Amino acid sequence: MRVLLFLLLTLLIIDAKEINLSPKQAEYIAQKVWQNEGAGKDKYLIWWNDGEDFASLGIGHFIWFPKGHTERFREVFPMVVAYMQKRGVKMPVWLTPQSDFPWQSKKEFFKAKRDYTKKYEELFLFLKSTMQYQAEFMAERLKNALPQMIESIEGETKKKIIERRFYEVMYNKNGSINERGLYALLDYTNFKGEGTLKSERYKGQGWGLLQVLWNMDDKELNRQKAFAEAACRMLNRRIKNSPPARGEERWRKGWFKRLDTYWK
Image (cartoon, rainbow, N blue to C red; front, side):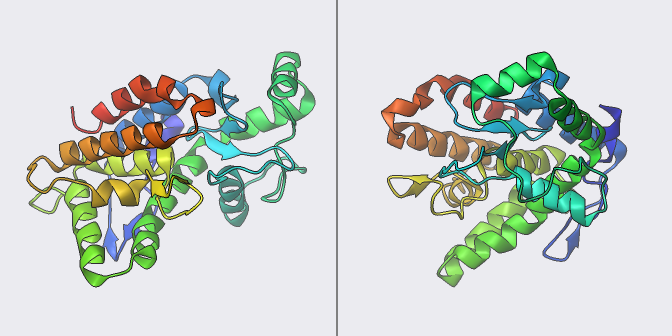
């Protein structure tokens, strides 16, 4: 976990505002994200959750699809690989941003995991040795989230509201970083996306960062609490709108426990 001390210590500049974190702040955020996604355990670096048709990889449990798979959710792991490729990170020769997940089914994947096949070993060791870069990717994604959301919004008033609330969650009133707020923004973006992808919606309603910010209560003075409560409402709406076959109700308790860490 010590390698994650560097989370967000690289360039994280949002709308020309530079964010400099102390090692203590970086360690706090890094450990919280990895604890949320994989309980901080190596065995979850490559995983396939029940009820899902895709695998989740790395400290951020980035989604990666098998060949020919189509899904409404954003496939993030190829974006991680592209980021590392750009940074010149050494990776398995067979791994590129265009690669599909090597195993076609959950059963096939867990057999490779149990047998510790060569390809599984290469992928596991790659993920284990690049945690810093995975963390940097999440920081990069958050850096790009605000302009991406603003670009997707029609109407100057709504744009200004989203921008204002984004910064209210991230900063204290004195202009210093609120590490809990920064963690909330980074974790939720990694957890449920920016909210700009039209396919990531049920019955036309999304649940990403954009929707959470738009549904925040301005009467709540604790902006991190307001963010968490809005996230609860959006995920409740998602579960209500979700196809019954997905059985998303089973995730509600774990999701809300995660959101509580944004302010409690």
